[in-house]
Length: 175
Image 1 (cartoon, one colour):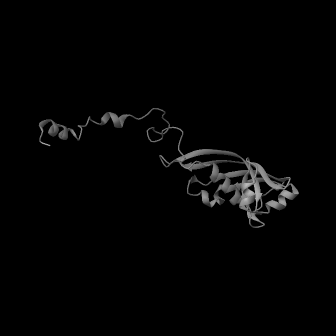
Image 2 (image 1 turned 45 degrees about the horizontal axis):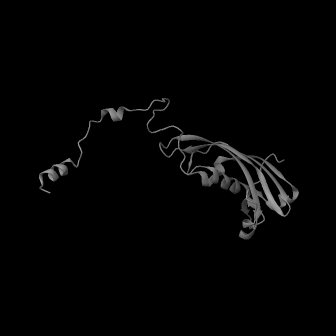
Image 3 (image 1 turned 90 degrees about the vertical axis):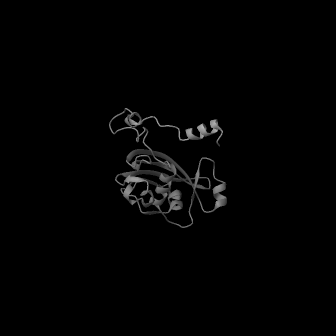
């Protein structure tokens, strides 16, 4: 086990050696996540095991993080816990990817070494929601209060139907 995660890895070499990687990657280093993050503090805990199953080079493991995403309703921070299992089959072509067992996702490797943080960032992007939101109705609730704010509805006076004039014209036959 390494005390610090390497920047680049050779997944085929690690699979041949039955290697394992355990460590943390700072969330601030994950550039493609920046748009959906409210705050880039924290770390992603990574635990990966490399090996072979017959001819299949594989990566199995888990990633964990608590991310602060932007709620798409109120644009405030929403805590999002990620705990995702990883099962990747290392392939070098689309044909090999098509032949992977059903429970494996392809990791297309066209070079010897790949950026570890890019692989982890891909896995995070796949499991995060497209439109993160608070579990409660954040637009209708005041922070720290579980009661819905109905004051907006109570202050409105009943409005007249804008098409009532047409109804009157229809009844008189002037239309």
